[in-house]
Image (cartoon, rainbow, N blue to C red; front, side, top):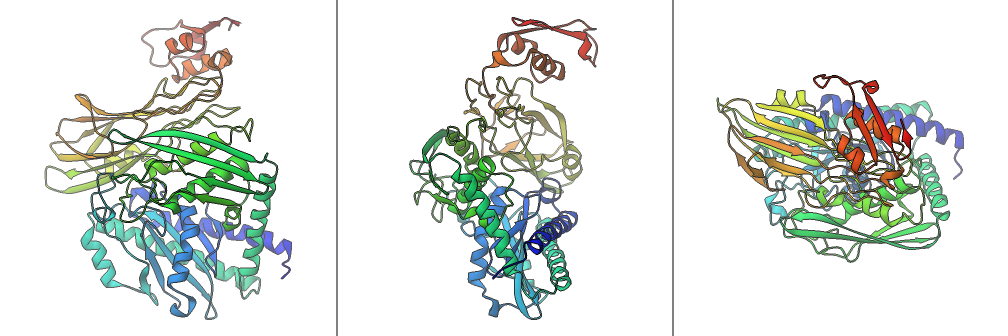
Length: 569
């Protein structure tokens, strides 16, 4: 059926606005800092068959892309004849959606004059779902929390009270966890109302024809971009810290074949005994994101942009684990896939490479009780540096590839009896290069008063740094430690009331020979505190001297001079 191209463009833009309204409603009514501050979420609209038409501006690739394929599970479980207006479905099954039991997808069917015409859905990281918190310590998924199959949270507008009671009885943060679920329902309702107004305005009985054209356009655009790449197979490999001393190897073979691209992760490590395993749905999510980001980032994101991308991983491998494998910390592996894939495509995309980034989001979970016995639990997200690009420095403390925001200090100190004593950019953490890697950050956390407390650090790159590209240097590894020694990664540790926990994030790798960096840029980095005087001299060949007051807290650019083998500056 022919669809007016102007109508497609108008409705596409209007859907984008509706999705923004959906996300704003969700964020503004959320109870947890995980959703409200860090935006650990995704929102999307789907046609009547469960094909994703579009997503909101925010949202992590692991949520949005996994939800795009996982939505078919909802449609299969509840065909239209089993649904009525006011029904709302949910699940947190890792193998059906976002690969982690804390991520809950809430899906709302949209009815127009009694016929199902679309779906709105969101996926959010719940602050708690029971089990061992979000850690890699479990030996099987059953230890990681309450697992909910696809089921009705609302029936014809009425909350499933039994399900709500079950969730409340199994989580440490019942008000926040249930509150966020209601926020997801509200966001979906806002999106659905906006869509129905849109259909009425344009006198449409269905969205499917317009949706199909929107998706076809994205598919065609990505195929055109793929067709410009040289055919061939490109490979890459990297090592992650893994769990304890068990490193994890990730391998990929990328085959460009005309307008199709095949990503095969054969050769990657077998699934792990601990909870760092990745389900295939999550592997597809970050792999397809990496392809689109590297090849054609401007293409609107929907089901059409997935069609030319084919992802395989051996069953039973760390990137395609089988039940009941533990998966709670799957992002500590999955977030490495964009760096792995962009490295593999370096030869096919000259000038578009990206040095490796800090990659895995750092998530620390703080739990305890204050002197009065009041319990607290807080999820804190922090980000390291992004790898340098072919023409630009890497971004400092930026959540790549997750897109999450770091938790503000004010939120941390408001929601728990904790004090963040320090939060600064980490000097010299970005890999040296013609283009410098992005910096990590240094933070320290202490208790306020005599409390009992513990921390679980879901961290990586404390042993394996982010590698540089084309003679660029590696970024600095991270550290997770007390003054008396290192803390274990991915495990819960009890702390003393007087302990201070240092969370020191890794930096991104550098791009190109550091000796080719503009001396003015080196000087600016020293002035800004991004690199030290010693690094400027030893790594960049630039001698920087400070001539101002040694006691000054504010040091101005004119107080410095720099000399290099390329002349005086």
